[in-house]
Length: 384
Image (cartoon, rainbow, N blue to C red; front, side, top):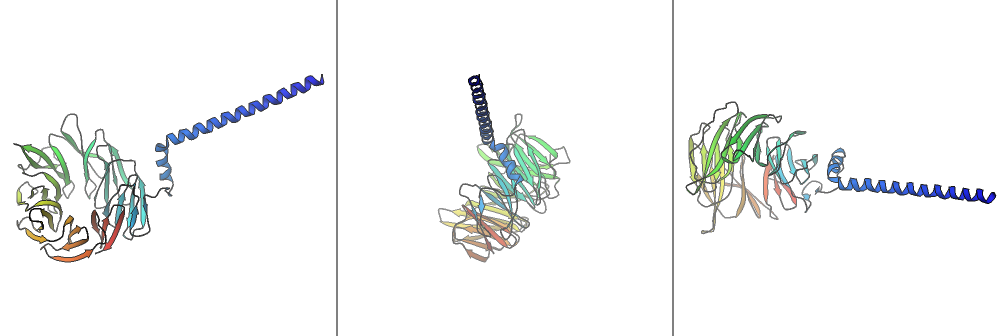
């Protein structure tokens, strides 16, 4: 009888041990399954985790002050703001003060991003994607998803945003949104729109389109009034391929083509044309005037052309020795970037200042009294 009791007790212990081992194994399987599930779905939950925690684990941008060092694996773009500058990377939008101190950072999930700015408004969107977002100085203002792929978009200092998308019915579709992201204008377009710029009061815009006429590339300018359903004016054919477009303080429209510059008044009258003396390298405009740089490979020379008043039709052409890669126009002067220097000119074509650079940079912009230089993996600042 005692042997039976011992046998039964041993069997009970064995079964309990087996049950505990089974429970431990099942618990391990469940934990492993949860960990694997979290890892597989990390793209969905990790961005939110990063937003809720101020400490980011990777180093896209490092350094205190200047230069700001950009990770070699990170693509970036930057632009000026009223009190500093902003940097857009593959995953975030960073805000910095003039001294290089980080003042804000915001997450995004876009790919193939384009960065544009006007005043304190920053626009980021997915080219050939569906996401578009407008940020202000203190916070994200709004974000939208389009039904069709985005070709291009632009923003005004008053907060209006134009978006050009693909279309099933038209060549493309033009949407305009107000400061809070509400749609205020739509147009199904038969034109191939290449750029959109806003009139100063924010109640209308111009768009530039590209076409072919008798085998020649041409541009056209259309005027749009958001409060009027009737079509505005359309320019005659402009025999050039559009490169960039600007609006003056008088709502005149300035078009830089690949072969000529042209200016139209706000009511559609052609003010002046300027045929280029060489191959256009870069062009820029501000209310103080227009600047263009050209390269003549046959003569191995370069030219800076300045138009300080479109209504006069006068152009100042200056022969320049250095090989400049980009130009930016500001009220304080015209700034040109070469591989080893930055030069500043006034609007009469005279050199006013030069600063040597110790290494080449790809682009630059002026903000306050500083010039910010974009390198391959760094952003540098010089006082100019």
